Image 1 (tube, one colour):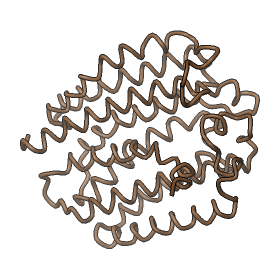
Image 2 (tube, helix red, strand yellow; image 1 turned 30 degrees about the vertical axis):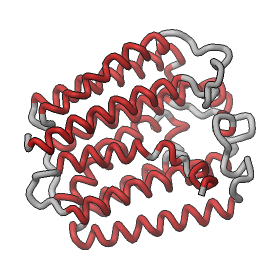
Image 3 (spheres, helix red, strand yellow; image 1 turned 90 degrees about the vertical axis):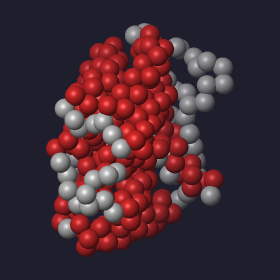
Length: 305
């Protein structure tokens, strides 16, 4: 069990759970809400994220991007390179997880119609294209927009549609702020990997922008989260208690100066995920900001706002 928790990178699955909770809390009180399909959709997007993690490791290893000297094998055991699982075992796990997700898709499609299939297929294609040839979006500067679309409109919008059977524009707008938080984490990770990715020809957005500008862009994403939540509240796409997320601003103030200067040459004592630095900072910030957003939406749902 522990091996597969590590292999599947289960530690980052809360990012998807938070996206699903945003959709769920926006759906509460709406006509047509069916808890059965909501819970099934939550399971579906979580399995999709898990499959994405497994496929990324398989494709990056096959393409030669992942090696013993690459960050993926330094901050945590690499599934294949560390011997935790064989390539065949990883392929089997990918097939089983995708098969389970397909079963969920069939059920939801029968009760909610073709739009569920469209959401699922779009998510699957973007998930595969992120690292797999021939597109390899991550290597062409499109990985970050890919994550925004998947963790924003596709996950939040798709889960909401599965739960309610409709998708107003307000939900699509409300899906964007949390999507920006997920992109901020990815930007931090890719900033950490600039010196590793550039020689391999992996042209992530931070590689294209350069470290200093990529750090500024990431701070812009963090600020944009609050701006878009406020806009969503102003336009009626989110209830006003969602502004509880503003309580996360002190954490942003703490993270800000670290992003305004280069990473340290050596990790601080007992730092757990080196050589990731900016990714860890973005993760801590995103975890709190996302939790506060969910808390605010929960308050609104309980109060009937």
